[in-house]
Length: 183
Ligand SMILES: [Zn+2]
Image (cartoon, rainbow, N blue to C red):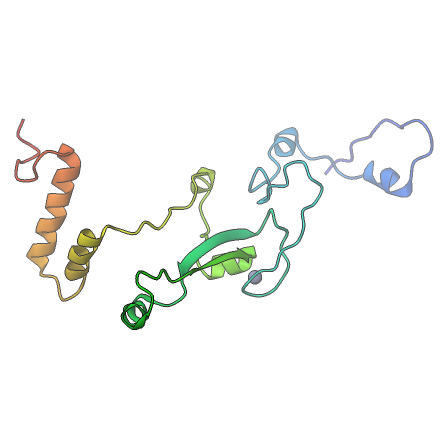
């Protein structure tokens, strides 16, 4: 590769600058497309030089706060099975068992390893939507769903349910019995 002469700057130069003048220059198109995986380098410093370090809950390394993956977990102190027993044995009526509020930070390695975030391809990386939130379904709906999920599902049954769901989605609130391809 040809060495491109750089005009001699005025004044004395440090050694590293003299050496830098001798580095081979890249073609112009390569210079314009330097590899950069993410615009923000996977961080959100927002003009700050650095941010404070946090503890990864998994490996106890110290990722910077703006880089760490954080999740705010709210869950019951006891699990749902024990909750019924607790409610039955409770002396106070309508006692609300307190919840566990925990903010967890993960380093990138642990977040990927524990599948909180996934490796995404170039196009999917552009997606900046917030993560899908877990939504608890209403009581009646949940019971139906639980019945469906348990036990072996017949092939015809599953297909019919799928077709009905697809039809409902396609006709958009029209009754599922009406075929979508009527017109
Ligand atoms: Zn970690």
